[in-house]
Length: 189
Image (cartoon, rainbow, N blue to C red; front, top):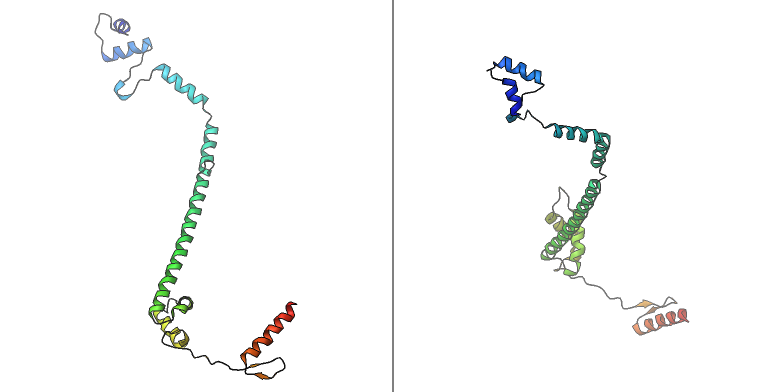
């Protein structure tokens, strides 16, 4: 490079125009290296080779396929959606169980017999709506169904007689049992 510059200038000093003309005659080009104005010819040739070897159609198809989910994105999304739905159903189930437990506790503390608490809670929860809250529905249910209240005792009348097969009234419990056992045995044999 130094030799080429010596030939260019010779023994004379040159003006910018003379310098530009001499460079052009030699087939040289000036570039500002700080601005990236120079690329080595070998690097340029390598980049041109790479560009020629690239199959842009294949690259486009690969990108299309990845967007459509061939790389598993749709499968992952489906798995996430399924997992979300599972968690949602588990949440709803737990929320339902909690509501029933809370309702059963409220029903029991409101004076319903413990053996009927779950049934009454279910019935009252079925009546709850946007316009009717749980406590109001429970009060109304208790009023309509006093047999479930713990302070209410249900008196059952014991019937002291039963009918025999011939239509006669039997007052003896032993005789009724004997008749029933005989019937069962006769069918079995």
